[in-house]
Amino acid sequence: MLLLEARHDRKLIHRLADAVLCLDVQKPVLFSGTCQEYLDRNEKPKPMREEERLVLETRLSDLLGRLSSLKLEPAEKEEIEKLYRETLKQLKKIKKG
Image 1 (cartoon, one colour):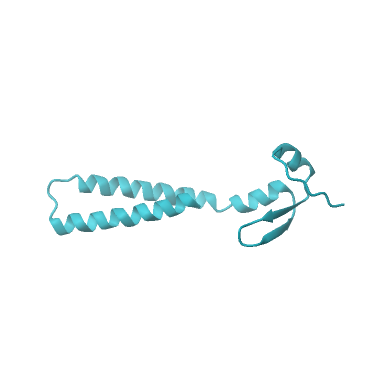
Image 2: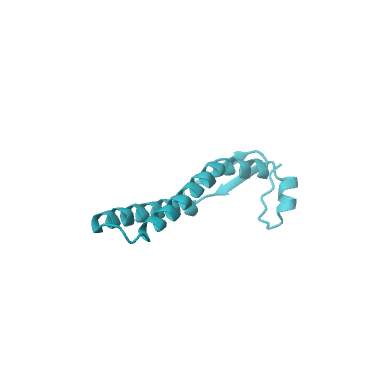
């Protein structure tokens, strides 16, 4: 039996759905499984992203600390600023998704 329903009641969806039709931006995807299985499938890479995010945030803190040093040569300061911008760009990319 096919029942197509658009709801915001996640508890009901989780109890009833045994397949998910995801209308993604690129193309529709039919997933055979429960709603929770579909969500879990998309969640698995996150622990690695979380670890990478923490590493990048720590690197940013280190670079800011080094930039605050009064004994930096101009070339050294420029290199650290470049590393800071690159690290910040990577962090923003991870946070987007």
